[in-house]
Amino acid sequence: MTVGRAHSVALVGLEGTVIEIEAALGGGLPKTVLVGLPDTSLNEAKERCKAGVVNAGLPWPDQRVTINLIPATLPKAGSHYDLGIAAAVLATKGIVPPTLLDDTVLLGEVGLDGRVRRCRGILPALLAASNAGYSRAIVAADQVAEARLVEGLTIWGISSLIDMVEVLRGNPVAEPAPVRSETAPAPDQPDLRDVVGHAEARWVMEVAAAGRHHVFLHGSPGVGKTMLAERMPSILPDLTPSQSLEVTAIHSLAGADIGGGLIRRPPYTAPHHTASMVSLVGGGPRASQPGSLSLAHLGVLFLDEVTEFPPSLVDALRTPLEAGSIHIGRSGAQVRYPARFQLVMAANPCPCGGYGVASRQCSCRPDVVRRYQSRISGPVLDRIDLHHHVRPLTRSILSAQGPGESSATVAARVAEARDRQTRRLEATRWRTNGEVSGAWLRKQLPLPDGLTPVDDAVKQGRLSSRGVDKVLRLSWTLADLAGTDKPTASHVRTALAMRRGEDLGVVA
Image (tube, rainbow, N blue to C red; front, side):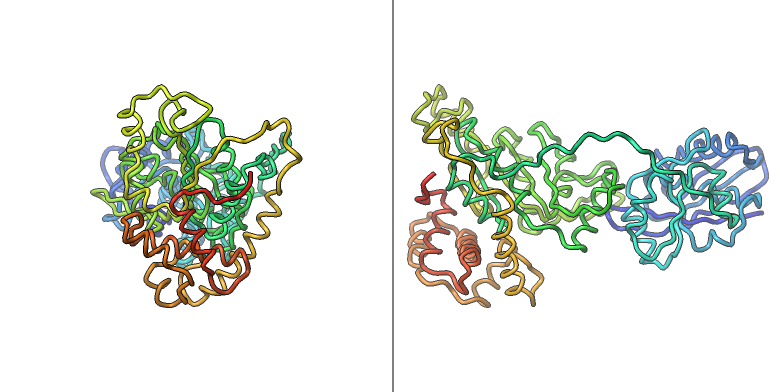
């Protein structure tokens, strides 16, 4: 019996495991059998690979072929195993020598005509291969740029199975020239200077960005809630190199095109209120896909018209808001996806948008208004740091006196505040005030002055224990923006007003 071996990577969430692909020839009628816990798309690989090998002018064994994926107890999903399966089968016929196969991982989908196509999850798969000690990888030609983001690996890009055979024989083929296309100029990025007026709301967004606090914006339709939320990423600092790699790996697993390099800016995700639970939190038959919460990792998750989302979807935010990750359990796998996002929610006061607005007449019954507002549960609202009512402009947009501060100006203040937090939290696992645990905040940092209003709010039942921690975190963020070493009584009062959604006294 002749056995050929190749290597690929099995992905369960972001965790990759290098697997061995064995192909053995046996007696009997021609048949190809695939074992080792493959899913449906992988089980079809034997047909794709056979057609691709034959149409590429290479021989497929005319006897029984058994393909085994080791370890057999690990669930395997996806089409990126095709290239490794084809290489292992060709190795049984001596078409490719085993020399380079021992230290090479192969990732790519094989077409029926023998071409090699791109697949998702290249970046996390190659990170796992590099950590396992492998030094070479063969991928589809149009994913070479993404693959080379992983340091320490020699990457070969191929367009067909013929190219793969040549590479494994020690004759690397010339990489095809990148396709040049006429690209339209990038559209203008949202900038905070576009927001007219709303001095209070702009300040709230600046405080939220500086401390990575969650925000709930509510107000009448068209007042500017969505406009403010869309500009939140523009005032956030760039991702660090390690953060860029982590975020890019998540987007690679979701199938995004990473040919442009690492994602350097905080991502922004805004799922529609008709989104399903799986599309929001991630998962699937074998928990293989990250959802919108994970795609917003280290960036902004915006839920517009949050009261239109099913309550079960909004309640699914509880654990990620506290833990910064999502754990998905399936019968075949337990998967963890990172989800340390900054949440921005926006909602109208009622279905018609006129409740409590002096300039509009509300047509909703009181019970309808109560039902509408109660679609966001108390536990979720209690996890939101900042509540702000966005008020209508007091004068026409057309008569406004010039633009406000640009995103670059605000981002500079945010970066300075973040730098103060990083230095203060250097010995901890946290980097921003919004992440710090309440216990560490109360025991390791000096308590601010003027906490009497906070105590009174607790006694009156207007502030929970979690709410006290939120006020303390906001106080430290306000102090960081002001450049002081400790929050003052004024910072505490302002933080309490922000937490409770009260008027901040800023002239719009």
